[in-house]
Length: 241
Image (cartoon, rainbow, N blue to C red; front, side):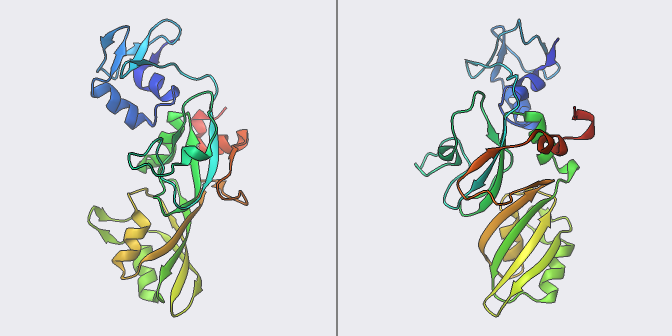
């Protein structure tokens, strides 16, 4: 059985489909010693030698999917040039490379999904799928009804207006407002920028849910493998077993 080169790389745990396609078009992939830049290239996993940046890669037969409750103070990166703590310091060595599905900035916390499955990453990250992410957001000041409506209807940011969001007030005083926000995008620091655009700022941000997957009572800094049914529910119906 042969695979397209991007599927081969995604199954090798190298990231989302978009990322592995950039590896190919950037000339960083060789097949049997020859540079491969054609995304239509077919690869035979049991016969062809594929290398990325000179290192041989192979698809994993085991799909690894884990959930981490990321604490504040950790960056979502395999290594950090400034020597900061990374989420991989909290994880064991898995039998195949895993990558984070989306990001949480250093000061944010909560549900972070890591997987060896590039197709699952594509499903969760691609804007066309509009996978919902739920957050608990604490921000400064007492937000008004007008503020909440602005967040719900979409906020004009420097990279375009955000999609409508579901926003609920969970607690409010003169000094702070606690929100539950559900968005369907994954722009860089999106919620923090949305809150800043209405004249407030985020003091804490915690992701509670991605699609059907809930953080639950998993302690901060701890991880667990996903149950098979949890993985299946995250996949498009056509990819389910």
